[in-house]
Amino acid sequence: MKRPVTSGAETTNPAAPAAPSTPFSATGSAAGPAAAPAPGLDGIPRQRPLTVSVEGVYVAAAQSVPAAAERAPAAAGSARPLSLPARLRSVRPWRLFPTPTGTPFTFGYAVVLAVTSVVAEYADPDLVDRVLQASSTDVAHLAQSPVRVLVASALWIAGGLTSAYVIAFLLVLTALERRIGGWRTAGVFLLGHGLATLATEIPVGLSVLAGHLPESSLHRYDYGISFGVAASVGALAGLLRPWLRWTVLAVFGWMVIGDLIAFTDPMTNWGHTMALAIGVATWPLLRRVSSRTTTGTRETPRTARACP
Image 1 (tube, rainbow, N blue to C red):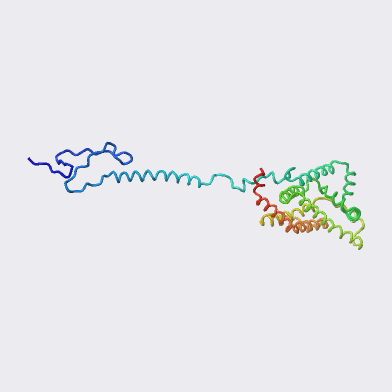
Image 2: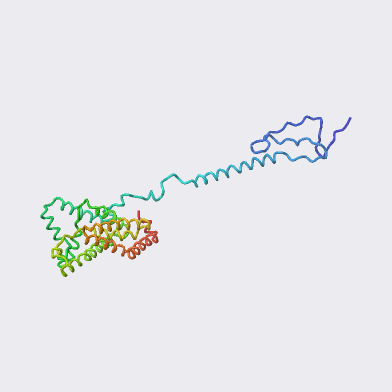
């Protein structure tokens, strides 16, 4: 009778049936209790169990799942939301027109002009004629009381509420006041109104003295807001972006040149040209004021946070 072959402390029986394979769990380890080592030949090292490679596969897969989960929110967050551009969201059409709190000077002035226009339209014609004559900035009135007539002539609209200068007044002065404030806007308006009026009426007086014009030219009607609006257009253009600046100047300049070519009222048309040039001459001052205001707002974060 042959004795079984032994190797160390273990005994191998070739005739014994092979042990059933142990199923692996999801983590790659054996599902059941620890099993006996697989049978092998004497003197041959046992092979490493396959649990190592299988376990490595499952571990790598388990580690790749959280990494993919972390990358998914980042990719989703990088997608831009489907919304309007920032410029379109910041457009507020109601800011194009004056408001009592935002642009008090333009709003109050517009109310006064609306009242005087209604009076000129529905009041007694003889009364309206006398009032307009007393408010005219002709040579005779400028020689007697220049300040009074310069202010009074700016309270009426030549052509009434249907004049194109009404819309220009609302849009231009509102935009200008929102950029430089009410007092500076009033200063630009009165500067253009006064200087352009003097620049057109003084030559008339000199021509009458020289005998080139009749004396009736000393008492002609001269009132309205067009000189002040023209100066405000020129001033506002200097605060706009280049493409919009030159577009505004080109459109308004073309209107002024067209009136000069038509030669219907040369003195008034030349006054519009001078008022526009006066507004352009204020660019250096207004740009310093506008940049200082903008810089002060950006450099004072406490004030910016306190504002709603």
